[in-house]
Length: 368
Figure: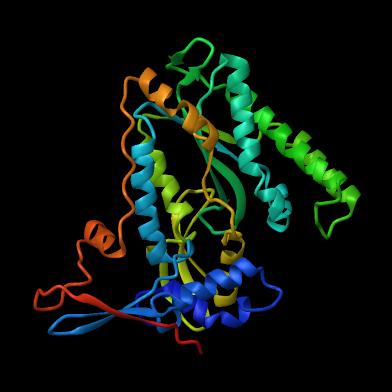
């Protein structure tokens, strides 16, 4: 296959694999939108100058679209850089035993609860230890470097917090890794046991087998792996998180070769940490992508603590004042033309002679 947009070519060639009634609706709609992006299927605007006429096709705005996702990433980064105060932060990664991955893969309603569980664990521990409130951003991930399903959380926490009772900012927090690990392990297993008891946990396994798995995960894995990293700058975490919140799970540069039968892509070996070319059938590659398509109306980033919508409006001014910083104005939402000029240095409405083109009309989508 030739051309630049290899992901779109993969989805087109494998349509019979994913475009089926039994496929999750969000998957079918997102993949279809990616295929229609920038084509007459979504309609277009017509612009003209004295020298030329131009069609500007509508975009799909899907998080799974490489081109639309990249623009959304840049906008999100700029907004968060302005919204977060300039203070030290800590990054925490919550993982779980691989035996639990298939449970969350099949029970996506439980998967969506993980950010709340993770944020509650951190806030509860901080309140018990320091009696303060902190800024928390949770980014749920469902994949690793090999694209296999792997549910885990990336969390950004301010390395200090607000004591509302004393009206002061505590500048330093020291996180206790083992304590957080035990609380996270207890929260996840308790949540799954509650779902099993309420009969809202789907599985091909019997109830006794599921109970055995949960017991093994809790007892045989006494040390669930979590990572704690002190981050000097918010920009480091935001740039990392942005790669996965508004874009497909695999970057375009990792797609090395696509044929009618197979895909060659760059995967990360989880043991050696090396990047290795990996070859798989086209249908198998698409099946790797499917679980990572977000469900409708599910946020890819969650905000808690002092960043929750309720607390932000009530405490933002006090937080910035105690830190001796000014609240920065949020960046204005740019038009399609202005965003292309700002982020890509291209003006789509200037013809080859340098004349500005003006809007003429809108054309409806062409279906079929």
